[in-house]
Length: 308
Image (cartoon, rainbow, N blue to C red; front, side, top):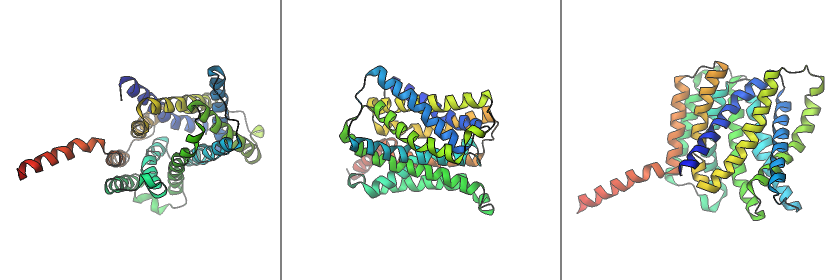
């Protein structure tokens, strides 16, 4: 991770953190499916413009487009819809903190499905720390209101689980050797093909009152900055610093979301949320292992010295 990679990572975390309050503002004037459809549609237009400007090769096989469709469902259609629906009931900052569990779900799903990603004791320990963080954030108070905020929080956790399956499914796309921007554009196009008709049928948006300028600005920022530009940055960081380093964005993302939610929406940041986020960050550090290797090496050296 050089200086430029860290800068890109921080910008990406800022864009994804701001996406949660942007969605909250947009929901004031738009229903869930319409907002999600606009997000992927505007992102698709932006990304395909980049593909055209860069003159990138577009996949021409049915197998490639079938895989892009599967990626679009797991990485866009399901999680985007669940997150936005969840935000109709819970605060933007809380939704971002819950999405921070994605790498923990990924470690579990990959360990169960991929032979080279088996769950080890450190990885299981990290997953348990992260799940403890989720329990702290959700808190016992919601158990008295099972039909309200608990289901919204479960929806956001379901989005995190869908993201984890998409990261495993992404391995299918390696054989097509697509440019990251083409991959992003392809999956958002496939998502648009599903979400736009669904929004037209379910929400019938043309019969709704015209939203205000603040809603349209939030939608534009949500789609272009929080989706199209964010995807380009995300894959650029993977190419520069690797997927493991890029996973650090999931720790920074909720921090920016909590701060922006407090500043833009007046949301309260509770001690329970901060404590739960700390447990999730601890779990991620254990799953990743790099922060703990110097300590393990020091303990090993001390043990050797004692034996000597």
